[in-house]
Length: 66
Image (cartoon, rainbow, N blue to C red):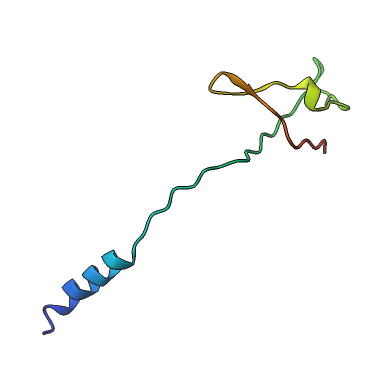
């Protein structure tokens, strides 16, 4: 019986494992914009950026300037 116990535990672990597919709807893109002197450019909005996925433009739904 003792020799079979490790095999039984491994089999139980296999039964408890699972997998899941997740479809991501939101991706954060952090951007640092500076001028030629390295100073940060402020006052930009979503209209100042173009974001593409697989070469196709996507809409910027949320925008925050920190």
